[in-house]
Image (cartoon, rainbow, N blue to C red; front, side, top):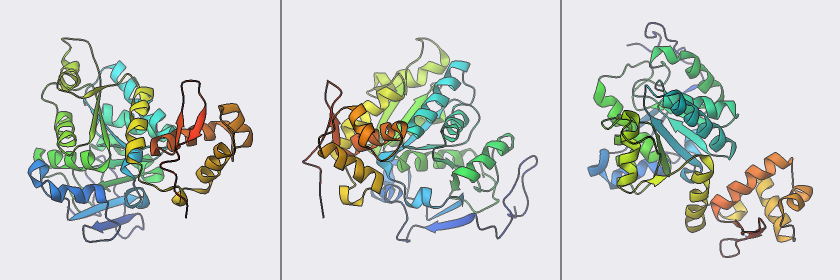
Length: 320
């Protein structure tokens, strides 16, 4: 299909539009997390030779897997599942994480909507061309993602998914891009479990929202929890676990931090330890400082004790 033509009911980005872009595996800014697939071809095949995208290219090229989360689940979830997925997308995006999903009906769409509602970053990974919304009923969400996020895929602009196997291939991209995958409601044979399996075999963190024993939509996440996946009840549980991971695997030296985060570290090093004291001296509104503190904890650059007081983690603090 030509990139100038959209699937019935959908919308396409016009050819030559500056929002269109491509990224080759040989490019210097190709995501290292995707390149890792080359080291484990037995898991899900090689990394995509080309990533086609629309929207903000930097969301992919500057993506830090520690600050990203993949959220997947049923296309026909319960009202409860939709609420949980949207809340997770919103709260994790507000904490500074990029929310990744597949733009499918149900849990995927709810996670994207939550992230966008929080004015956070979100990337949709599509099985076909990234400029042509699939399913077509998601054209409104697709437009919102292009305005404030990005849509990517390994098939050229305007191309339809060639078959069910294309969605399985898509799943490996979602699993590889982030350090963690969350499953919210999935049947026992759901495609979401493929994403979780790939994430597990790649050494990523897999988390699940538990469901009622015996419920069809709970079979997938409950089974993963039985097999060793992490049980989470919401964003707070996820972030608590991420902070532990970040403390061991901090990737960003302090000298490369955004100025606001660097200033916040200086405030804490200067003696401010309580949230109120930090907010009084911090480089922005209290709500923004609370989000920045979570980001610093995930990086392992600050820690919070049982009294709620903050201090810098000197063993990970590096200066020029």
